[in-house]
Image: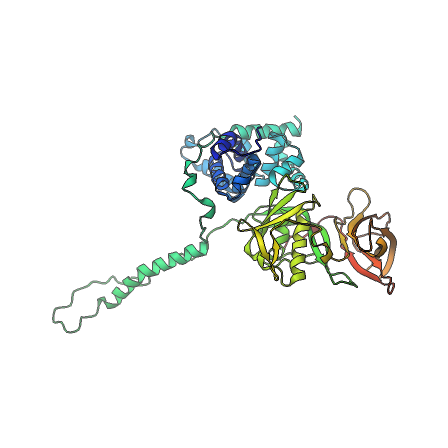
Length: 156
Length: 362
């Protein structure tokens, strides 16, 4: 992963991080809404008064994606899955979906998805995950424990 | 496959579904999503009602005059055919409440509560951390498992707190931890709503409210400072006396507004190792006493002296492990110092005893 500390323009920051932010958002809200979440998060970040002074822009964007995903409502993925069930033309879906995986991840809260992604995909330590999400290490560990519990069927 | 590999596999398959990143949003200059006003459902309903009334009123007036013959005219009245048994009431706005799915939040964590100590010399409140567990189905916590949000919204959650403990944060106050920066000491940003600016009603209550939030937010890093932000700006004037919070504040900022004995770790039975107390104190010659009391008889079942690392004008830390079988959820633990004046326990903090986290679910 690339972390740039320092000032860069919005487009540069966007081009650097858009792909990984989209992957992160995919884990948080599912593949159908990930692009919208990333766009909303970037618009929000770039419009923020504090943005010009942000040194670690990658961390800031990650946190904004998490915030926007929270606002997005946790039931969105469930709703999308229900819509898929009744969709007449499932082929219009923008990506090839892995239903088993979506149903497993659906059981997790947005925070739990974030912790699982940052731990198991980004390979961050609990301390780094905590710093990235702006929560305590204890909270990260609790989220992980709870996520493992909710994914019991997947893990068994 | 190990659990770790399965988790990695799950994430790999999730990421594999990731769509192409969206194009760089060029409309940034034109859009101001952060400042766009959000209309509440009530406002939308009010506007809809007004619109329906505005449309319906002329119709009703017209219906009311349609059958009347104009005065002073000889022209035959127009033949009008009114539909029979047609309801004449204009359908009102749909008053069915919108279907909402409340977000359920499960929280396990530590929050700081307030206690009025017995035989207090200064009358300042004591800070007592408590490990709590709660499930909020009302949506007050918005799915965010954040101790800062829980502690600021306790009054709105309608929870019953452990006996002798309270919160001074009034209903309506809302705050979330916006993250920590990389500075040293670290600065945690707390985003508060405007109700926060009103304080808690009186200078001591205002400062206690700050302490309650600061201690909760800095539980993982007691050296960290907290920057309070309202409407994207540091707080210029807070509470009854317009306290400036432009600079970040920490655990030491308002320390002398607390009881000379405070706790900094929740006291739990049944955890790893012996139950232990941990806190800070500023008492005469750093001498403290811990007691286990049988509440039915008032008898002290256990009493030990404890030394803080500093005293008589400076704050020290103290810790004590209970290697005694008398502790149980039915007993009461007290921490105090014996007053040199009259030999009585002073600034007594009563510690809630529990086997695990306090279940605060309403």
